Length: 505
Ligand code: ADP
Image (cartoon, rainbow, N blue to C red; front, side):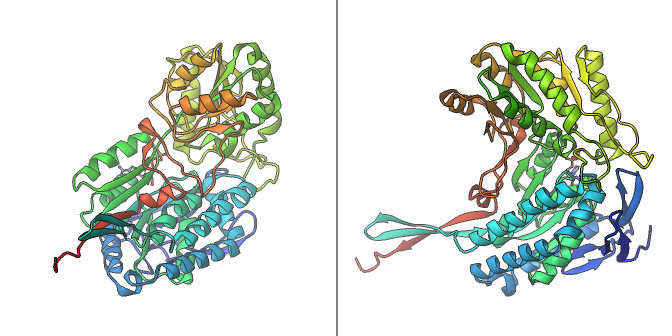
């Protein structure tokens, strides 16, 4: 039981001072959790606490959901013209842009990602996603359908209702934007729960949502533990839909819990994405993108291209060039150094988990050609959750480091002989999120793209993402799509209205 101030004045390591809200944002106000329960947020570069924030229990979740339910039927939201919903969202995008250095500072501090990456990638993605969806607000509508001369029908697109959204810690603000953007332009109301590892930036986002002028109760933002606040949100009888991004194991639990009241769900879960390099490829490009595809964001990307298949005759060259790219490009350091490529893993738990996989790979008999353990403390001599980017060869398709999502800077590189073999092995996984193919042969590029079992394929690239392009997985990597026009499907439902014109006949 604690009694924190609802607003703290903090100074980040880069000198930026700001006011950090700590409460649960319910019905447009920051409030304390009923139990006084809190979550401590840690700087993973120093392992020191940044701040504690309030963590929701079931009673707080109930209050947030009821606020969202009331807002759903409030004329200030329900009757707001679609164009005006878009204007609100555009205003939110502008406010995020105005505060982008602050928001990037908080995410870098809380998550461990380099500040320059948070600013030039995460924040840009969040801003462009909100802007993209602001344009959709008044561009979704139904159809008229002719049936018989005496009758016709039309459809209207309506919001699904109260949406519970659960997001992960690897891209705190862009994941919030992916969820809030389409849900709000479709007219839903929301309770969104941030990940307990990165609870800070979303509370500052809450202040901007308020400033943008969204009616009260339309967006409710809570922090809280997954098994407690997350589970309460998923099971709440007034929640009509659940949208989740996180691990496959948690996605499975959420699906089970949502079954209780047959809730509509979308899930974006884990991956073990293949990247295939054919012998005709531009080797420099293949090395550059495959390095980025697994080592960026500390390897903490659900679409990380973590299984690299290289055609046999260029295999040795690729491994050599990839390993030297890891040594020369993966500059490890704290979040604030402009030259840092790789910061610390987000938490002690993730750090331990990744190291455990590295040990497992070694005990399974794979060869470490680079890295293979923790990285020494940072330049200030402080401890931090740093891991050396690790490259394994001599990996078989049955090893756990080949089959399971590691979610860290660890890659396995395997040789293959034929296109058929590469496709078969790439598809030999329960996951199906991303995939990449490197070749100069146009026909082969498109043939392989069609054959890979995944929601997305990059040709001669890795990790491209755009708010206008659908994102999601097949197999155990997810259900439904986010982003693009496809992302609207998750947040609206079609009602059919039959009209009888035949009463005089
Ligand atoms: P990770 O293992 O990387 O932390 P998770 O899938 O556990 O990934 O977490 C992603 C999000 O899901 C977080 O917001 C977390 O709080 C939430 N979560 C975890 N467990 C549950 C659960 N049982 N019910 C609902 N949400 C959960």
